[in-house]
Image (tube, rainbow, N blue to C red; front, top):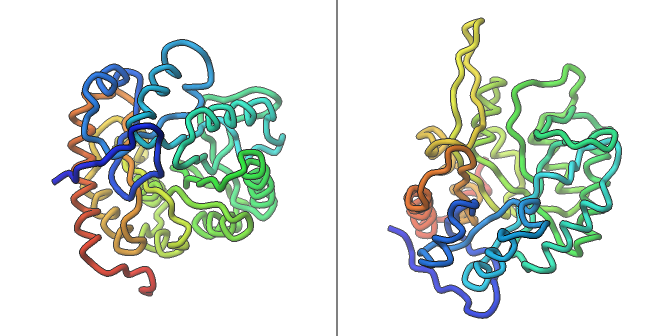
Length: 296
């Protein structure tokens, strides 16, 4: 059962520990017209940096709903350093929208002044860790706020990686004071692809740092060698195994703002709201139970 939401009338508020929905272009008008019963929305920051109708819609929607900004272009792991112009544009959107949360990915996507249309994996090394931490510090100083860093979905590992991904992410938090956007679907996808234990991953993350959880669907591809590869494509409902892992996450972290992502073959808003209602039911159940963050 979806909990009713009391929305601010004049300004956005903080992101509540409820289930929200990723806002996409096709739903702009429906949200403005109908003000559906959604606790909060998250948008990709880069989609609202230019002109046109998208920023105008968001300016309207933010009056009724808390908004979270989720970036895809800062390239925190790039050895080339941050793009100052891009960072300034991120700050411009944040100042205009006044988001409850700002997040980015543990990945890289720029090299030699060129942006690649993907979130690419990092070698899990001390050198890469220093690069990421330096950039997170710079972003937080420029935005004058704490950001969340999202764990990636990956399909390969670098032979010379020396730090488990979950320890790498925990070190970023320890060294910069940032928070974590825990993408439960990404943990499940990467763990399945690499033979990791997803529960070990969850238990390695500092509970106090978890500021948001993402849930999404993924696809399965059978490779010629007989192996199975899971692809984080955000194009379907959340898989049962991911819902189960989400329950584990809530038992460890307690109720956390949770987002339903759907980016390919985006369905009607009602479908996303159904998924959000499932997450909200799990959150409500957890509100009635003690947090097991200190469990082994």
